Image 1 (tube, rainbow, N blue to C red):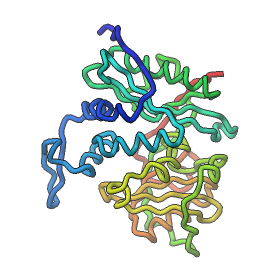
Image 2 (cartoon, one colour; image 1 turned 90 degrees about the vertical axis):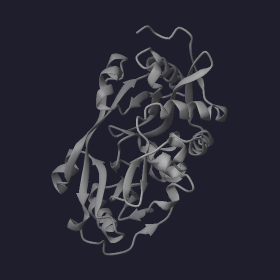
Image 3 (cartoon, rainbow, N blue to C red; image 1 turned 180 degrees about the horizontal axis):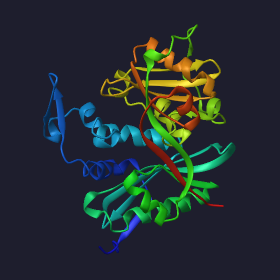
Length: 305
């Protein structure tokens, strides 16, 4: 199919929320409602903001998307939209941070979100968005452009030159009953990005390290995120976030600091009621603690300068 000839990519504003939601909603084939222990098909209009959120995050409704986009812009991060004849047909978000890459603090631009309306896929929209974002990343002085592709999209990224494997790890699930409760209570508090930005992200690195600090402390949506079990703080010499899954089936773990503290945090997860914990770990942790492996995660990159 031919490339869209009237395509324009620009920085997004809050005025674009409805169009952004339309793009993300286009990929949902069935809307489901959970009621009385049953899951039934429903019309979009019948769903609450929380129920829409479960289908793919804050981009599923105008209310939550407006909060998310505002949070992003307040942090000085970047959202862009692609337009055809004034219609928004694509959206992407770029998170810029300085964090360890192969042991060296590097300024990176991480492609955190990219979505193209289903009617406009395979028409050059995704490539145009990435090229626009790479230019912005260069202007901001970034040395590396990274992305975490779905397996089906790896070929696309390699085709446009985002092909170096920056990070490879396993998506895993821990049974917390195997870990004893820690000998002392953690310090629980909200930590800053400055506290963790120079530390290795030992567990949970599916996107960039900054992404998980941002979604944990700057992008929480009242009425959705505040009803999900959540704890953050420090145990041993490491900073952690434990967050319940929206489905109620266990939790997720993000950990900055030392590998040696991972069993402590998993014991803490058990103590607060998480029977299962999902996260991302590299092969060293995989060999030591032997969790159940659910899949593989890779972060691809391209050097910009």
